[in-house]
Length: 446
Image 1 (cartoon, rainbow, N blue to C red):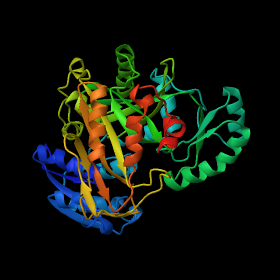
Image 2: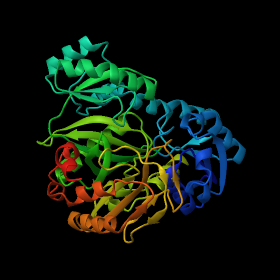
Image 3: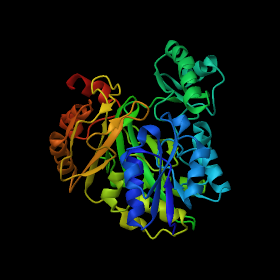
Image 4: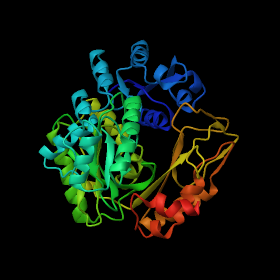
C-alpha cells in the first residue's frame, strides 16, 4: 500500500479523497492555487504545495507543477479526482514516466475512450449497442446534414474529444445543424483542443442511465449496478439516484453484464462508468465511458456499502478485488443533489463569500465549503453534494426534502430552490421522467 498520495484536484473531491486516504492510514499532499490558499482541502491534507495562480491552466492543469509537487513531497501516487487532469492520457503517461502511480486506468485506455468516435467503434466491436450515428468525425456541415437526413431528425451534434455537454447541440433540421456546427466546433476546440464533431440520432424520451464498474489488475471485473442521471440542466446532472426507478432486475443484470464485458474487452482497470441512453421501450445504447470516478459515486456507495475511492487506491496499489458480483445487489435507495453556487432561474454562477452556512443532519454531505469560504469565479460552481439514504425511494426522497429545507446558505445564491422543486414534483416522485424534465416540467415552477 502507498504511504503518501498527492491529490491533483480541489474542492469536494479533493476532500473526499483525503478522507479515504486517512481511513487507509495514508498521508496526503494537497496542491492548491493562490485562490485556494485557505481552502478546506488544503487544511485537511498533511502537506500542501502552492502550484500557481488562480486560473486552472496556470495551476491545476499545469502538469509539470503537479509532478514537481509529488516529487518534492515524496508522494508515491497521484489521485486525479474527476474533471481537470483525471481523463488526460498525457498526464497519466507523465506520471508513469516519473515513477509515480496514477490512480486510474492505463493511459492508452484513457486515450481510446476519450475520443468519443473511437469509443463508439470499440464498443460496437465488443458487442455493446450504440446509438446510430457517424462512424467518425464529420468533415463538414454538408456531410453532417447528409447523415442527419439518412438517420432522420432530430440528431445530436457532439464534440468528438470531450463531454460534459460542451460542444453539444440538439438539431431538428438542416438549418439548426448549419447554425450549430461552427459554434460547437469552436467550443470543442477551445475546451478540448479538438474541434472535431460527430452526430448521433437523438433518442426520443431518453433516460440517462450509467453503470459503475471496478476492475483490478488480476482480471477481475464487477459492476455495482446503475445510477439514474436523467435530471439535468444544460446536459449537466443535478439530481442522481440509485437504483433507477425505471430499471427492472432483468434489465439491470443485462446492462451490468454488457458493462463488464466492455471493460474486459478494453483491458480496463480501476473505477470507471459506462453511460447509456435508455428509450421508453427499455432499449439501451452506449453513450460514452468516463475513465474516472464520477461526481455521483456516493449513491452507489450507499446502496452497496462499498467505498469506491478506497478501492481505487487499493487497485492502483496492486490489490485484487475481493468483491463478489452476487453480493453487490442494491440495498435500499440513495438520492444525491448537487448544490451549486448559481442563480436557480438562470443557472448563471454566483461567486462571493459565504457569510452563513448551516448543514442539515441525518444525511451524508460531501463538501468543500465552510463559513467564510470565498467561492471563486475561476472554478466549477459546485459547492457540495447532499446525499440521502432510505429503505425505499419514498423514504430517500422524504429524507432529502427535509434536509434541504433545513439547509442555510447566505452570502451567495444557490440552486437549493431548484432542488426542492425537483423533489416535490409529482412526475419526479412517481419516477416518471426523462432527460427533458428540467426544461419541460421544472423551470415554470422554480
